[in-house]
Length: 180
Image (tube, rainbow, N blue to C red; front, side):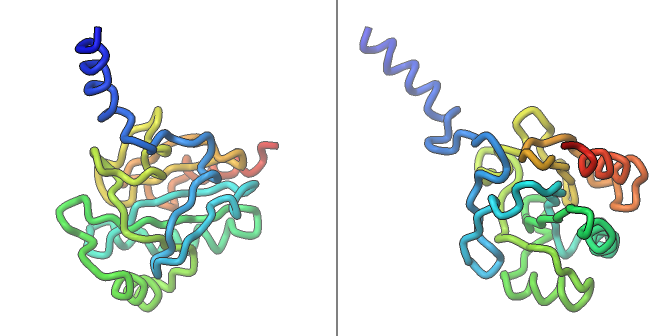
């Protein structure tokens, strides 16, 4: 009996990732800003959120321009963009936090929150991405997007090729903003 219990524990423990059980809402998570400051995502509760994994040296990096425009257009309506730099895809985000912030602010004039660099896929993915990918595909490249409703639940995932100008993405954002 003891052997059977031990075998079950050895199979289940890696699956649990010890303490990384996904929470009920994106807005239940604590993360760190790019400068290391703790951030409670609960401050975004009640808004519609678009979470994007970003990288400075990627073919999709030019999407920053569209993301800034999207944020400027939809911020007054209740949309917040949250960016998580990731170096998971061919080392396309090698920079330090200061280098990432300088790049984003000077080249693209990013004014939405940028958080610490995290893993967005695989066994070491950050807890917030563990949540985002529960029931949705994990990112296959940089600039994958997750639309999150006012309740903190993921509505839809958009692969990297879906740009911020995409009519379907914008229609989904409009519908999420209109939802009670």
